[in-house]
Length: 449
Image (cartoon, rainbow, N blue to C red):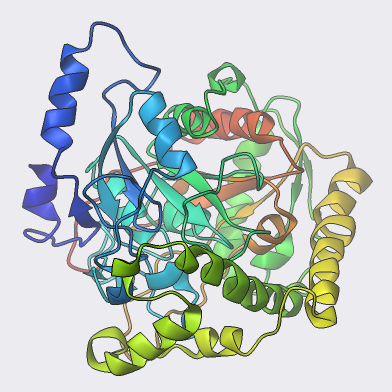
């Protein structure tokens, strides 16, 4: 009823692309069950519309090319959630194809779902690509939602929608049945209103792990945290905001190393996009090849042709130049790809996160996740308000963002990231910050700020 009242009506958030037609029946079955099936028994969650569900809902990545594509079976994520008793309530809108179609895209827009609007200010962007998941959780359309990230697509929409977002270590959560960009960086991740909810959802997605014992209200006491200043050093208002957060961390008992910047800062973008374009072609072709014939597209080239044929509906605001660049790439045996991937690992790990953690003996690195949400701009597309997602994304390391407060009425998140498989430690720090800062404010659905 809340989705009905607020998704296309009222503030018209556009966060949900499809509601599960069997949701009420499934809820009744869970109500009548003689025993709980798991920790999430009956809890309603929404999944990003690039995650396969073997039910009546389509899995389209927001594209018209796949609007009638139905998965033959659940993705690994959907199967784990059902095993934990969760109710899959529907699918969320997203930046189409997880924001890899164009370098001038408007995050939160898809051909199938239209625009997603930010619940804090309706003329503001929800960020990408898990845009609908972010807006839906912020607006209480569900208890929590699942997003996916290649670089920033869980933590950025979580930050600008006032949420907790967890980008796990790549490989912690099964990736089968998620429309891919990059096997080396893609992962699903939880998005929730509290750290506890995110921890419970992460455990369910990871096949039943329990992260709740890590949650400690005094989790910041004695922690060594390094401040990555360079991400916002040229943005004076955001740098001041970060300094206020650092002071709160220090007052909560954390030992602060400031600055603690990555030696490779600013050097990763070139190798990363090279890797993503190569892997997009290889990984998306493999996914599409396994779709049933009714899907209509079997290769990236087919999708490009469909978009061109349907340009008026699919490309009214931005093009598909990244798809075209990916289609021009060779196989993953190409020396250029192999070198780019090696550069990514060196710059993000050896000369990046690992270097800083080891030099300063840190538990985690902290920075602001993003600047505040930018205006929806149909001419120029997204604005770059800054962000720290790339090192952890490229390294495949975990990254948690937690609400840090409002900047002129718009949410900003504080990020904690560290080495591989340190989700429990990061959740402990995040929970300590959440209980100290108590920074999340409910959205007001303002027309504008």
